[in-house]
Length: 625
Image 1 (tube, rainbow, N blue to C red):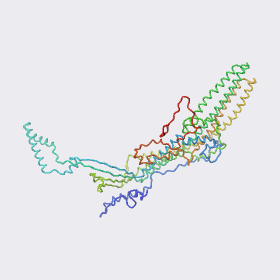
Image 2: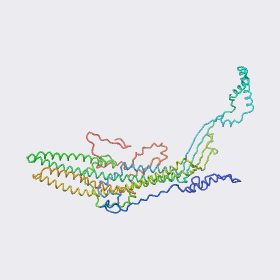
Image 3: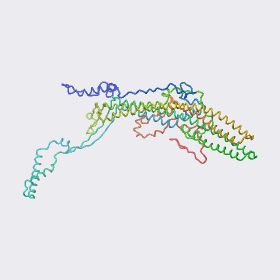
Image 4: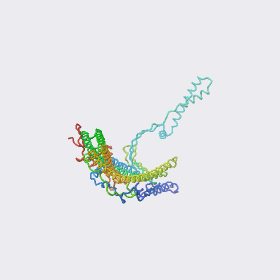
């Protein structure tokens, strides 16, 4: 901060904020005053520096390429993962992702935390500005007549009063001495001494007049400004800036996880639907087999054992169907919550069966170094490191003096009628310095503690990078190996279907026993279920790859930003907020426009069961009926 700015804050660039010293013939008596002015001017010149270490972003060396076995079958090149869900070419998935980004409550919490961090940054920056406060008081007082103020006002006691007091004490002492002499004959000396001592204990009558009662009316302003000479406040603002950016990155991390969870849940729905279809299809085949064995048993061509085994096989497959249907319903309910609506809001949309999305023929994964700029958790860890690093400077600044400019201006009067006269003005202003010279090494230990915390933040940053690399490479390996498994299962299912057909035909012709049919059918059920799971897992693993690469966010887009831009009532209208006593509606009322959209017919949940009355909620402010 420059000198001109500091001077302008106190009263304009033409004058220094200190009264000029009167001229002196000797000159020596004014030395302390000008020495103080020079010291403060030097402090103002130094106000552009900030103590403590300056932050530099850590440099971490990463490999130029992923491990060979990890990227086997994946394409090299820069990965465009900002809108990775578009590679599945599924309109419903894209729509669900959009709705989740607009309405998900976890994401809304994250953006409100950004709003909170922005306000905290404003608190830190406010320390750089002066403070101004108003005051007013009325006091009626009366000083003690026997106190310092009363005796000073009354002056010394008159000689006549002192003579009268001396005569009175002498007469009283003589009378008391005679009484003691009569009571104690032969002890005249003792009685005289005792009488004088007792008379001396009697306090004399106060001759001080009563003091007057007095009124005091006062009203004015007090101002104070701490000049951030050594940068402690600026370091705190620097820390708040970094913490704010870390909160933004944490919001993006929530967004990345949310979009990945929406896609995973969508794939789970399609996978479970495929498993239900395969199970229903196998139940139909096994019912045909049971009918065949029953017919052969009725004709005496086979034993009852074949019938019972067919019934057991059918019941076992039918028992798996409710489990899959329950999991399917829960996945649909989960999707409703993810998009910020009631659990059954997307029931009609998702129960329309469609195939599991297929992955693209080519997947670009980029280079490891790109993680440092794409992964929000890495970016957040780096900003948390910067925020903690700045706290070292905050603690270091406490080793140095604090310089403050303060002033007061008021009207003070003992008579209300002259309260705001020109002669009632009282003022004072000037610089002050405070230096904590010794505090039992507390501040030095605080610096050491902040340095240790910064070291912890650096280690946490390194660990975040390592975990991110592990997550990416693990996700890529799982994706490629699941693709291999999917291809093998597809061949196995095709062979199992042919095997089942051959076994049933040979059994019908009486060329083989029923055990071969049972084995073939059981294998087909297991393999078709495994294939449906694998098809879904391939897509889930690809979603995990995109999530691990930090995909799903863009610097230009910030979903639900209307909750960040919506100002607080105290900041947008401080005067109105003050006079309303802060009695505004809760901040969650009056949601931004578009947050309460009426769901489409496809989004509306099914009608409630019979006998259950539907409940309707009235919008605040709506007219009844």
